[in-house]
Every structure is written in C-alpha cells, then in structure tokens.
Image 1 (cartoon, chains in turn cyan, blue):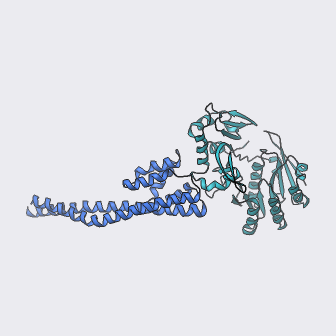
Image 2: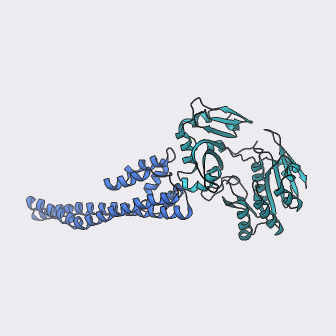
Image 3: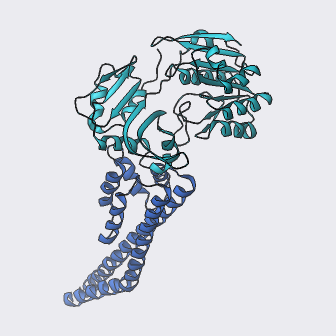
Length: 289
Length: 166
C-alpha cells in the first residue's frame, strides 16, 4: 500500500496530549481505521474490523471536549451545522462522528452531553483500484459500490485524482469534506491538477451550483443517499456532464431494490459500476451497467 | 573651559527632554497596540457572524499583515501548537505592553473562546473590543495631558542639573 504518511497523525493531533503517545507507540497505529472514545470506557482503535484498547485509563468528559475543541479549531460555531448532522470534518479530512443527547425541535437542532466520538482515519491510497483504474475511460459515468467502511471514498478520491491529472476538468461536491479534506482553502489530499472543490454544501445543491458556475466536464460526489441527490445527478447528466458517485450497497441488485436509486439506474446515467469487496484486503471489480 | 561646561549643560538638558519624549512615544505605541487589538477583535467578530471562519484562520490572516497586533496573534498561533486556544491566548499576553486593565480584558476573553455559537462569540469579541476602546481613550487623554509635561519636565530637570554643574 502506497499510503501518505501523516494520516494517523492528523487524527492523533485531535486527541488530548496524554493519549497521543500511547497511540503513536501502539504497533497497530499505522493500520488503525478509527479511534474511538466513549466516556467512562477505555479508548480503542479499530484495526481490521475489531476494536483494540489503547489505554487502561478511562476516557473522561474533558477528553471528549478536548477532541471537539481541536476538531473545530476552537471555533464550535464554525461546525454547528455539521455537529447537528452528527459529525465534524477536522483538518486533514478526519471525520469525527459524535454521539450524545439530541435536542429535537422540528428535527435535530443540536447535540448536547456528547459522550462518544469516533475519529475515522482518512486513507490516501494511490494504488486503490489499480486493476480497474489502469487504462480506465474517465469519460464514463461511474458508480462505486461497497458496504459501509469498504473504501468507497478512497477509491473515489483516486478516480478523481487520476481523471484530473489526465486533463479532465472535474468538480467535487464534497459535502462532508472527506474527499479533498479542504482546510483553510487548500485540499489536504492530492486530488489532481484540474479539480475544483465545493466543500460542505449539501450535495444536491452543491452539484447544481458547480454545474452553473464552474463549467465542469465531470462532477464527483460521495454517498448519494436521498431523492434530492438522485434528482441533481439526473439534471447534471442531462447537461452532458459525467458523474462519479458512491453509494452504500452490497451489489447492483441491492441498489435496485431502493426506490430513489432505481430511477437513476433506469435512466442509464451510470455506465460503469465498480464493486469493492473483501476486508481488509480489498478487491475491485468493474461492471458495465 | 566655559564652552565645554556650556556644551555639557546643553547635552544634559537635551537628554532630560529626550527621556521625557521617549516615555511619551512609548505610551503612544502602547495605545496604538491597544487600538489595533480592539480593531482586530471587531474584524474577527464581523467575519465570525458573516462567514463563520474559525478563529485560528482569522488570527493567521492578522499575523500575515503589517498591523501592530500581528506579533501578538503570531505568538498565540505558535502557542496553539502545544496547547488549547484559551491557554495559548493567555500565554501570549505577557509579551505585550498592555496596562493591567487591558490585560484583564484580554485575559477574560480567553475563557469563552470556542464555546459559543457565532453570534454569542461575536458579542464576546465586540464587548472586549469596546472595553479596549475605552482604555485607548483613557490612554489618549493621559498622553495628551502628560506628553508635553514629560518632555518639559525632562528638559527642566536637565536644565537644573546643568545649572548645578555650571
């Protein structure tokens, strides 16, 4: 695996000082997929699908607060909307999932008493999907499918990078900030030379903004989940723009069973599906739709 | 001999005036720093409300400017490499020449960093800015009253020394 160094450091930097060295000295640190902190429990790291304790000192409420302060750059107001959706994207593209008490008033308006955080370590794997992406026709609209945690975002980032470096003008609607990991206006991941990123806008709205403003040849978006996303994809595709997207699904039949995806598939917008399977050694398979 | 004594007397007189003038200039520089800190806090508050830019990014922008408060914000950012924003802010304060009252205002601000939603955070900053502005007015008044006095007093003391020497 040709991984960029510093990915785990980006996650570790968010933790309280007393936890940092314990993680960095842990032999599994380099392969950690997530770091998990739950108030009153030992902190753990997710390695190859199972949680391993990283300390025998229970997580305190202040530790969780420190993570949130670091993840929000001491500016909780700047992540209030994200926090309401249950996650913050921290510098370096680290996704910090949060759990606590939801304040509900016409939907979830805030989270208080945050009791758990999950830091997902982003991976930049330049060899992801090598067998599929080598000699790939980047002008084909592509749907990347896998179960949760299967490496969809990593493969999408690689698809974007290769396509961009091949000379395509590509725009990324990066709602969660995980594809490009933009911080202070600069992408933290290598996403290619001809890539424009719109971060944190809702995907459907962001996709249409990019279409109107940036004259893209390709638009990429992560995790299409709702009918609005599918409608935006349809609009974009009808304007002659290639679409790269990802979705949670174990296979194409799984996807067809869901009403919102069925329409997109029946319209024939996506020409290729790439399936990711196997864990932790992933395999990639491209299928014409 | 008399010329030498006269030259010495004038030199002592000038030194006295210079010391008084230096004190006045120092006070003006301190007032300029306080005024700029107040202005920076107002700018930060405005951008927090309109663009919700994180505080470190706002500070970085000030640090990259030529403003008198730039070194202070640079120190805060440097401290932030090893400590949270509140501590980093307090840790950078001793490097400034703020008066006790100004120091208190800036120090109190640290407690609320990163804990409020945008409007409350901006209100905190604006409140501190207006309190600093009052301190600037007090300083300006003091400078106006004491600036010329310090120079004249320095010159007079120098003259007295010169007379005694002669």
